[in-house]
Length: 106
Image (cartoon, rainbow, N blue to C red; front, side):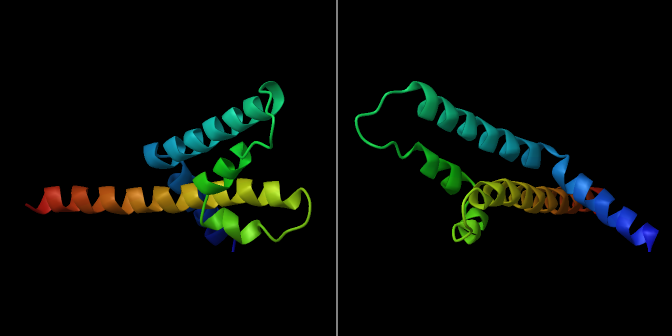
């Protein structure tokens, strides 16, 4: 039982620790920093729609959390970013593995 949970955490870590997943998380962090700067330091006559970019950059997974009440929406955006980074990382690992396999057999 412990070996299977250890292998699951290892697989999750391998999905998150590659250039594509880390680049996506850096992009999400940069967008949220920009949103914070816009909300705190920029004067607007009307409402700012900067926070919409936080949902767009983590869509479609973040859109599942829009119906949650209160601050749970923002936690859902963070969860969505990590889930999508893991999916992108798994796709990268699969694609890189196929390229390595093809290069080894040809």
